[in-house]
Length: 427
Image (tube, rainbow, N blue to C red):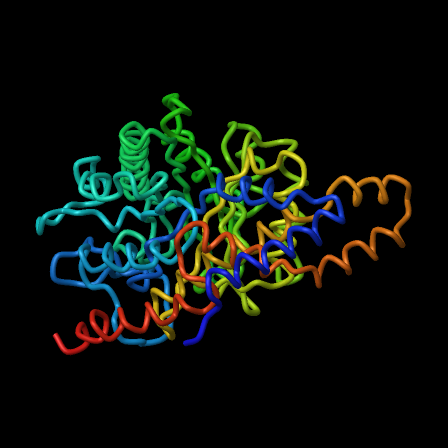
């Protein structure tokens, strides 16, 4: 594949920088800001949310569905780590890894979820080393026999609730130890699939039980230098179409009342709602936000993130003002119909592209026009920015960070597919 030479990239960047300077935009400042933003890259894209929990068996009960059968899925921890390393080498910047509890390294010995500990993730910590900015963590409240009937922390059976509370407590301990060793706080995010397929009679009961379970998990104080805790809502799920216990309103109230981070997932709301609009609505009331940036297609289908209007809207909300200081960005998609490594690279690079695009806006000029109620000038500014030479700045950022420019990274993925991924299908 023919790509621009380094000299061509540098020349185009110089011209682009001059164009932006004419608008009052310091391109170097935008690049410096972008370099300080870590994106949390989700491990579950690499193996279709399978995990490595069950010895000799797939996860079962209340699972999450990934569609497609593209060859080369990671089957072991080593394979997944190799794929993650390949993807990371093609993404500019220093980023975080997002793990689910079901990706533990149990050494071939079955470990129940209420018994997992930091020792089962020590190899992940050692592997992440200096290549990753940090590790985030998620309790796995799905794909388990005790989740098969659709309820976990809100289950009417006290014994099952106790099991999942113990799992949540274990994940808290794991997250704190990861944060201690990595030197950066671990964001531990709680999402449960609990709900009813059809219309329930009692809507209060499950939510009272969920409230009690969460309070039991979060009862002991934690050091925010080691651990940050988020709660994540959902509009509905397969098998929970009529009633979701952990709704947006429930978790918004809980996050405000208990001082937790609120997680906004792009696919967890009504199709006409966008999380870009919610950021400024909830930040005045919660300490920080966690974003799960995904792409819903008619529902929470977790498609690969595109460089589209909503992604740009999210990025603009984050880049304007001091918002990024209080927001943690993670991606959440799993597409098994395309090369899984390429999916990571496309999604991560698009998130970074959107942030850079937003950081190259003349924020002061836009704010002044809006403050004067000159909506004509505001509209002209926003439209004119769409055709500015942003791509030249992005290419230079990639070149500067030592990753392929343009589509050149796809050649690397194709070579990796031929040498590594394709062989997995024949093993």
